[in-house]
Image (cartoon, rainbow over all chains, first blue to last red; front, side, top):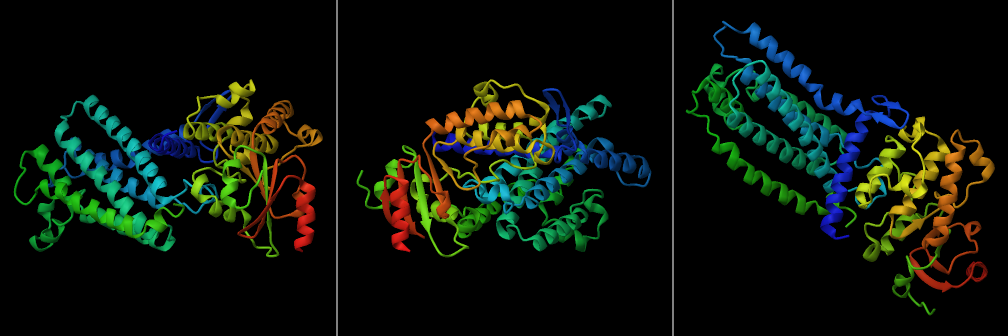
Length: 263
Length: 200
């Protein structure tokens, strides 16, 4: 087998394993005769949508008339983007390459496991995204496909790159993983997921604009409201991906013995 | 066969049944990782058998599929080769599955998918009939056991050990190591045992 085929087979098998593990030690699996149904995959993939749709419903009915423009057809995609971003990061951070299954395997290195983990999360995110589009269309709301696709791919790209960068930096350090999880929970409030940036005082706005997610979320909001412009600039989150990738490359090369210990 | 160094031995690994004995007085000596280190240049990526060859949180079937995808095997390669029917225990994770079925499936799968089989004490070379009868899936276990035995007869594998009582007949080559240093290579178990006494 060629090295490239071997590598892609390995990634595929790890993605398969990630999905199979969602049966949670058989607790989320129905076995009848020689057939089995792993409903853990569906649950694990789609359960964040309960919060996404719940929040959308609450804010759409609760804040109407308050002066804040929260329309469910775009608000749902902003919230969904955030959850996709968060789940990509948290899934990879919780991946333990020190577990017995990986320990004695040559492929059990952080690099391969990270690629498989982010790809698994990306497949799940795409599933959630498509289902939400179908639901929004079914309910008869307007879909601005270019706007939501741009934000989906940019948010996922940030999720993937941030997850890989942080994992390569902190490895399996449990304390730092917890700290990072708290940090990302706090970032929710600094990414103007719920409220538009215009409600913040100008002195705070100035700092919030450094966060690329602010631009992406505002892009959806302003794209739907057709008020795009001003400080919101989509070239900023797009170009910021380049230095982020270079930093990852630098970290990867400088920590090669930890990321690929068996080479 | 004149093998004077480990480099001379390389072509024989995978083409003969080889036993590698690591002579050591250190109880903590890790023969598993030592072997990995010394064969790194030509056996990288080739998995050594351990108890964790199968992921305990997955079912036997998922583990078989996982290794099948990784090694480019067709779906159901295991069941097709053994002419077996899938029973409910194949769908269960380790804690809910049958112990013997799990072990036998894991060992047989390892022999099937790996190009160079490298075994150690965690691999049971033989299961007693009486033992297997305790299994709730004894008929299936017997079939797998038989298949595994036939496979072991035709497969060239390397067995690594540091315990003298594990030295047995049936190998083409016996290699003696003093921890990480290659000493010599022999053609039979008796010579290895004799040389071990000499070195002691």
